[in-house]
Image (cartoon, rainbow, N blue to C red; front, side, top):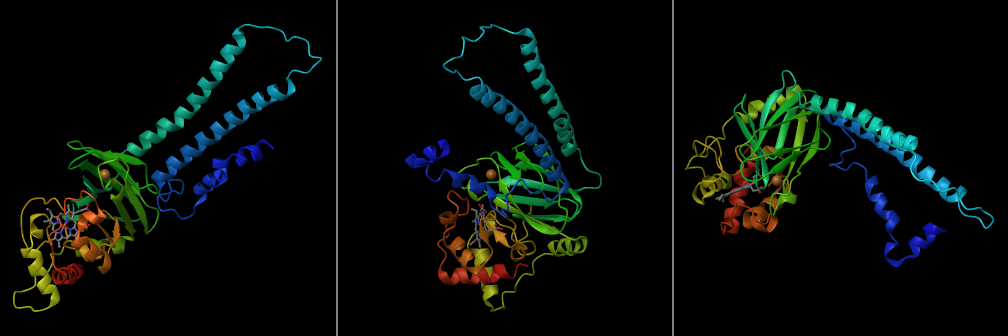
Length: 339
Ligand code: HEC
Ligand SMILES: [Cu+2]
C-alpha cells in the first residue's frame, strides 16, 4: 500500500530501476568482483562489515517496528508509565556498539597492514601521473611505456608512484584499492592478478578538464609472454632511411619535422636524453588503447586524434598541429610500424 502510494508520486515513478543499475554484469570497473589476492582481501573485509551492518539494521529496525505496532496507543490503553533515564540500558547500548566497532577494527587494521607490506621478489614498476595519462617505467629492464601496464600473471608487482603535475589516483578495482599519486612524494601500491587477463584502471582523483578520460589498462601475461614482451620493448625502433619511398618512411619524416619530437620519444629514431612530457611512442602499435586509454588504437581514432587532440581530450597538452590529410595518413602508416 505505502509502496504503491510512494510510486504514484510523479517523479519517483522509475525509482525501482535505480537499484537495478548496481546489477550490471561484466562491468570492467566493478570493485565487487576481485581477480587477485589484494582485491580479494578488501572484498572479504567489505562483506564482513556489510553483514554486521545488516545485522544491526535488522535488529534496530525490528525493535523500532515492534514498538510502533505492538505498543501503539489503543482507545482503552491506560497512560504509559513515565520514565526518565535508565543507567543499565544506557551502559548496554554504549557497550554493544563499542564491541561491534572493536570487532570490525581487528580485521580492518590487519588488512591495511597486509596491503601495505612490500611483497618479496616483487617486480618494481614506476607509475607517473600526467594530465591525463599514466606513464610506466620498468627500472630493472630500462623500459618506458604508457597507458597499458603490462605485468606477469600470478606474481605480485610493487608500484612506486608519483605525479608530474597535480594529484592523481591510481585505481584498478579488480586488483586493489585506490592510491594517490602526489607530486614530489612517492606512494606505493601492490598489484597481483590471478591469471592472464585485461583489467581496467581509472584515475580516481579529479585532476582537471580531462580527468574522466584518464583511464588505463592492466594486461597480465603468462611469464613466457611477459618475457617476450620485455624483450620486444627493449628494442629500439628501426629508423627508415632517407631513400625509402614508402608511406611509413614519409610518415617518419613528418614525425621528425612537424614538431612531434619536442614532446615524444621514439627510441633509436631521435635520440635525446631526458624525459619528455608525452607518451613514449617506440612501441605504440603494441598498445591496444591510447590517449589515456580513452580511445581504441585504430586508424579512425588516430585520424581524429592527430587532426584535433583537444576535441577528444579538452585541455590536452598535445596541440593541434594543423596537419594535412596526407600528413596524417603518412603518420598513421608510420605509427603502425612501431611494434
Ligand atoms: C607539445 C607537446 C606535443 C607535441 C608537439 C606532440 N604531442 Fe603527441 N601527445 C602529447 C601529449 C601530452 C599526449 C598525451 C595526451 C593524453 O593522453 O592526454 C600525446 C599523445 C599522443 C599520442 C597517443 C600516445 C599514447 O600512447 O597515448 C600520439 C600517437 C601522439 N601524441 C602523436 C603525436 C604526433 C604524431 C605528433 C607530431 C605530429 C605529436 N604527437 C606532437 C604531446 C605532444
Ligand atoms: Cu588524474
